[in-house]
Image 1 (cartoon, rainbow, N blue to C red):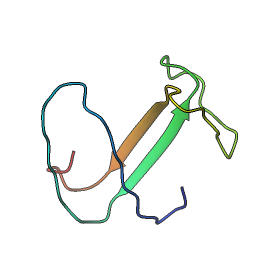
Image 2: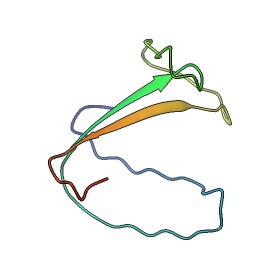
Image 3: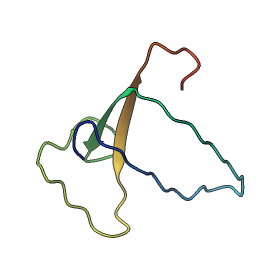
Length: 70
């Protein structure tokens, strides 16, 4: 994913809870991929290829001055 890009995230919730959220804005987000759920070894190679149905371990950090943005 390139800097200053727009993306869409699609996910499947484990529970049957319907959540609809719509918003616009600009904020800084950092995303790192890890080799396991221990989050001790970040993935350094680029591009990072994964197989279909492979579990991904990602850490996402949001940087914003807005206290209402979570």
